[in-house]
Length: 375
Ligand code: SF4
Ligand code: SF4
Image (cartoon, rainbow, N blue to C red; front, side, top):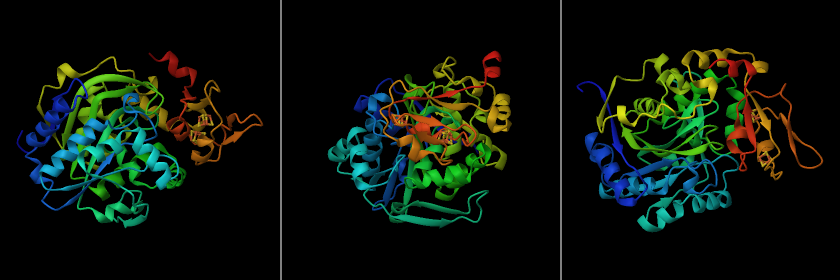
């Protein structure tokens, strides 16, 4: 394993607190010990995935048992953890309060004594080395911390194929500013490069992927929970994502953030430590058709907008909340007199924010029929 980045992989069949703590402690130990990452007195931002107000069992957000285990490990090393994320939608104290409560993070704070971020300021980072984003507006709490641990949730993703530790860092962009970023980086390649720029600018000290129960199908919010039974982590976020991709039967290059990182030569050679990867791979994990082959990913991403998969509002469960209208960077969604949303596909830039943020999972991504023929 010399000269290779270590990705520590541990089987973890459930979110029982003891099992999760043992797996998280092993992961840090296999990577050289948490003392490499956390020094006494340091403030550590634990960047969980809190995409939306969902209960832990819905597998949309980082499970609180995983957050709690990381918090305890940081505290034992003498660090001061702060749980933080900016979900989709407005980034306000009131909105965050409901998300913290429903996602189980308030309980984590009560059990462990850690803080929940309540700094709603924005900081600007100038990142000259950025490939496409040299100027990033990010959560102000970053200025208060010494290090960041990114804690992704392993799920399929309509835009990037999979979300893990790198895509998770998009939650460092405050609230509705994400809509502007989607508008600015419309092409999936540009968007993925921007995500990699955020990751390289923030440089998380450690990355952990919650893959005990992931999400398959129409992720990151409209799919189905699926038992994977693993926790993994390492110093390099791209290497951790690459192993996460393999766990769900993807080749790393099928994940657009990994493809972008590979082009830059920043995905190091890596080796898996801990439990064996091969027996845990789920070759039948439901990955939307267009992503099953790397060549299709490239093909789909090169198609003109009109031929690319488009969002369809089913109006089955929609309650007219308007989240999709506010989230749409292209202003392509309008409401009819009955408060039913409709999309103007000519304006749509295929960012899939409407699918990602619809609380009722009422938005589906409909593929061009040609892809249904390519089995
Ligand atoms: S489609 Fe979803 S986000 Fe849009 S109005 Fe209906 S319930 Fe709300
Ligand atoms: S309609 Fe949906 S997929 Fe299209 S631009 Fe708006 S949010 Fe993005």
